[in-house]
Image (tube, rainbow, N blue to C red):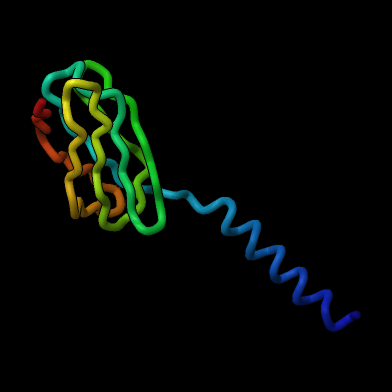
Amino acid sequence: MKKIIPYILILAGITIFLAFINFSGGAIKGKIIPADGASQVWAISVRDTLKAAISQGIFQISNVRQGTYKIYVDAIEPYKDVVKEAVQVSENSTVDIGEIQLTK
């Protein structure tokens, strides 16, 4: 039992350290046209699924981990959903994917 206690203390210390690491992720932003044509935007990767609301056609997804994402725009009828593939996000940077034109 005495041999296990140091390992438990080390594990607890590592856990506490990792809990207080400051995560500094990136962001994805863009504009939907027409502004009232979609309700939300999703960023999907192998590890994460994030979403953001759209306000006046503008969206920003924050706290995005570094990696490659598929952006899914959840359109409101009569508009069709849009998927934008292979959006690369780097740590501490904002990727502007520009304007996304919705079609009927």
